[in-house]
Image 1 (cartoon, rainbow, N blue to C red):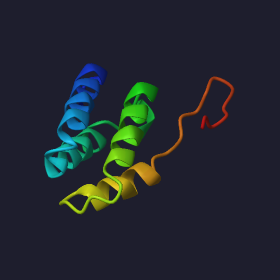
Image 2 (image 1 turned 60 degrees about the horizontal axis):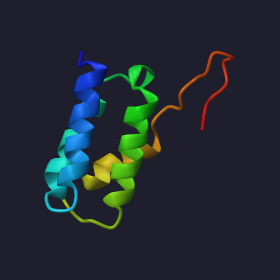
Image 3 (image 1 turned 120 degrees about the vertical axis):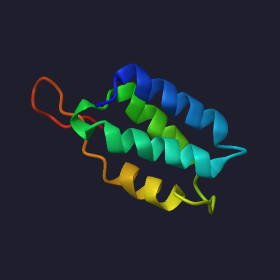
Image 4 (image 1 turned 45 degrees about the horizontal axis):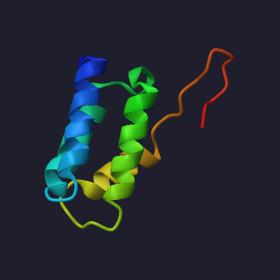
Length: 86
């Protein structure tokens, strides 16, 4: 399993790559989603995924559609009171 630090660094790199290398950016983000269970994905990583998803909206590159779908169905975080956070 990947560490939270690895996920954060990978998603920062993906965000930097998005404007010029959207395929690489999408693949990096998909790799994070494949290695880190949704329940263990930190809120900061979720926010980076959401920003990356927005940046790649309308871009037709390999993996972008898969990324949009994976981010869309990402299970919400559950807070200490058992409520889904938004």
